[in-house]
Length: 211
Image 1 (cartoon, rainbow, N blue to C red):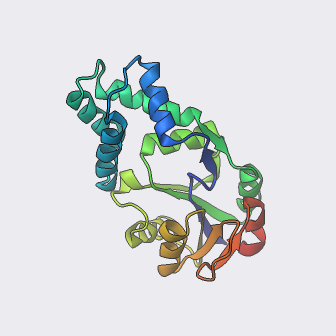
Image 2 (cartoon, rainbow, N blue to C red):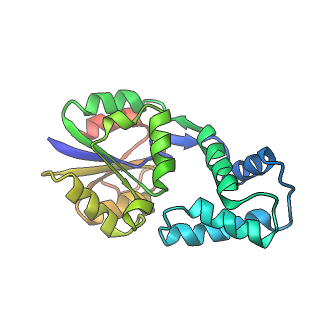
Image 3 (spheres, rainbow, N blue to C red):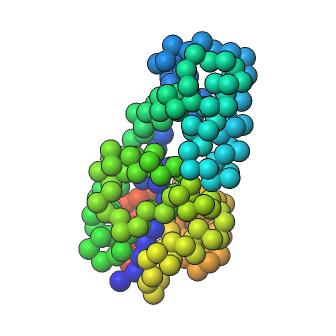
């Protein structure tokens, strides 16, 4: 039996709106007026906290802009609205359940994702994916983001096996770093790249590669 890890965002679920649209939806749901530079300040703060693997980058960034712009809400409330706006704007990628149901018969499965624990786990729960995975490696919980080799090594230690594969939609951040530490990299893309161990156009084409 081999172990197969999956990326989450863009691979098993996809966003149906831009991050700026999610921010606007959250702001409007709380009746917060727009301010020049508000979204840009949030993005800068969020990325700083996220890169540092802060366990609550949404709340930390929202608290910063609430103070900077004297907004009529608090960071926790604004963050929760932003997270809910994101959760409401995700959808399951076609073929995800069918592939995972098939693979769990002869593979150990894990999810390896950059993100915040409570947000990524809620995506898994809402889309009925949690039951498939024996390990959930989430960057803000383990203190390291992809493409750092350490997160892939951690994933391998979490589910020891003779062979590991990683299925993802991002070549540079996901597939190539995984390959560099010995995973078989499976890139979901409409284009080919000889650097990937395998390129497939959809989840339905992953099974033959693993076979």
